[in-house]
Length: 429
Ligand code: 5AD
Ligand code: SF4
Image: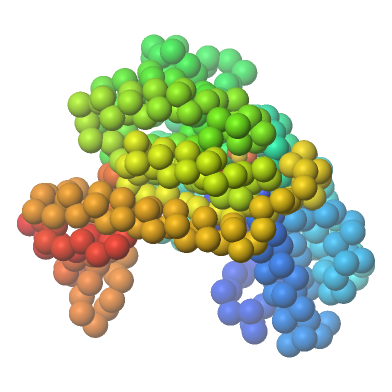
């Protein structure tokens, strides 16, 4: 979501006549996009501002956008000398005005207002992280309020984009040469537009599974989506994947813990039994669907037994990849009021133990592909000298192989010859 926000801000600034540079030495304005999901990210911001001000004194205007901006608001000006403007998560459409005001008046400026009704969700090809892959938000905000999570406070309540607008953007992206699209949101499964306009011709048990079918029916080559929420992950989503091959065979379904007691304390709204049912539905699909998850270790009151339940769940699910985090209390969330009673040493040891299991499972899932042929979107040149190209499979695995730059943007068949940790290697057929 953050990368997608940066892309849209860059698009907007360029459209408004600003010249963009990634060389901070040349810049008159530096904008820092921020994340506050974990404490580390916040620390990074303050270190970065300190560096900027040390190097450039008052030569440059510095703006902060993203979750930290929204949550800290005005107090950022006091906390850290050197910030000139603050743009909230929904105010990114007005970033040019903020810059103009800061230069015109030479005083601090803040906008934490809500998103404009006519907000333009598009990005220009040059400002995307990759020319051939685009992120398209379909829902913003989150209503779940998992007890550890700052996102609902930073990004506000859920708001779905209209299906008509999404389809329009999908068509536009296709005409610009994009081959893979990621429909994104904190919880895409709770997609709920105000009207069914654009979905009339598509059946489905939920608005999201109807939307998947509607987007797939445009014929767009590769469609991925993230993030899914276990309670709202209806089996009809798997049926949609079975029906349309251009809906990619990858599901990111964060579970957060393998213990029902901890899931209750996190207020996740699902049990391990429910989660396993979701996994079974995915595994029972005739397609081979790759699975990934997020896990928090060391949530308050997590015992060795609870952690063992997480290890057991991993055994059951055999994830293709997983992202493991040590619990970090976020001020203002319900869990922050609980005693952070799992010591740092225990959090670390659980992290490393689970990481070992994760690496083992990942290696196994990757190694299974050796000898097979996978479809790969050629996204970039990973090493010019040796002519190495790199791209993703439909199941979200990175593949490296030899080839020429004329192949960029093509979807090719690669015979997989080797697997190393989290990368596959192969030869173009
Ligand atoms: N501490 C640790 N990890 C967190 N996440 C969200 N909030 C916290 C927190 N307070 C993790 C969750 C989520 C991922 C994006 O970040 O696993 O799925
Ligand atoms: Fe945070 Fe839970 Fe919403 Fe995910 S579903 S963004 S973890 S509150």
